[in-house]
Length: 531
Image (cartoon, rainbow, N blue to C red; front, side):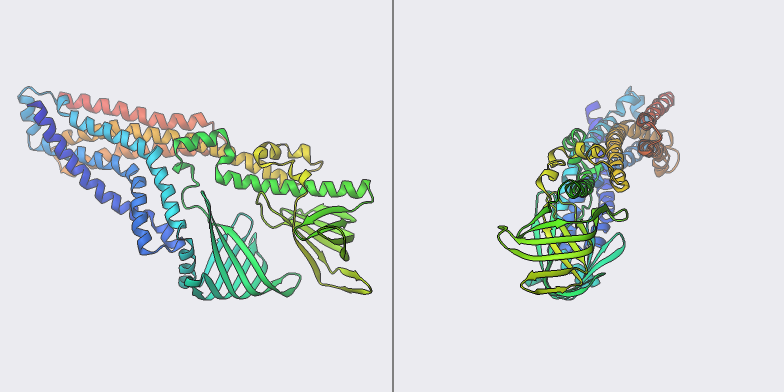
């Protein structure tokens, strides 16, 4: 008889639980899709796919609330209809009748833990791939809808405007490309057309834009440049968030912080600044101790450089200012022929981005040039692109030992700039913050998952105690402990993120919320058994 009774109660619980889960999941999943729809312009087909990918994320929060609602509603109805009194009159104890609800609570607790630690992060990655696999359509759809598309990187921002789109040919027509750095327009390119190329990698997607028949405008000049290319990495939607990392990934990040993509990007920025300052130090050493030129190598030529002074730009990262007199010799790649000799009083040498294989651009302002044989003149400026970092400097900041190289930058550079020291400190701060977020997210997920059991049991008990009122009043009352637990979790996470507070304080607050909820559950059940 008791088995039949348990099956009957559990069937009622599961029916209400399932219907509530479906309704809440659909509502919340639709809300989660607003950001990719608004920011990336995904189409209807992608919307349906994203809805499926976001289901496990919303289930993490929906399952406890659906089970709480089901427990309060079903047991409240059983108490209101005097079915529980009839069972107790037959000699069946109240706690025996709670077993189906306890089974549902344990099942939801385990499901929530599995969802939050494993299933949801995996589906986040699938959602990322679903959106980025259609990166080309997203770009063209944004241009068609808004007239432009933003391509953002850590160092630069490109805004691409176009009059017409030709998705079938991967081209844009009537193109204007605005390049910005730190909210300042540094370059503007107009082009008859631009070709779009998408390169797919395991963790990210690169968008390449090649402008054809283009004209370039910047602070120094305007000139026809023919073909010019830009590339950028698509930003992450959710994957680059500690909240959506699997247990294995969390262990990997704890062992190597730079395995986390946002930290790796910060490290590359600091590495680039370290390399530019090592380069400045190396050029000064060569100029002071030898009468030789400093050698830089491009794919099609060798550059020999002599400068009067070299300083790290204090206002812009990854940049050196060159002071006169500057003499530059361009040789062919085999060093057999002098292409041109340049002389100037001012110039700059800088990295345009922070890739691990990034190259340097060299600019001479108002230089005079001499090709020999009496052929000479003056130019507005001279630019040499794709100069390789000297190998002996790159070896001081290898990718496999990147963090140690950045942290020891004050020993590698005699007088590191404020920019470099700030980057190093910022990286260390973000690493500490990421480690704190790992502790915070791990413990908050554990508290939320384990808290499902006392939370649902409290809802069942309140449903029995409040049987004289409206059936939903028990759910409303049981939502108060749920809200209190969420407050403890959020407060604990905020304390963990606060650098002035020990991490243990935030962890203690989270688990204190679970402990208080458990004590409340025992108190409520003690009162229920006495009714």
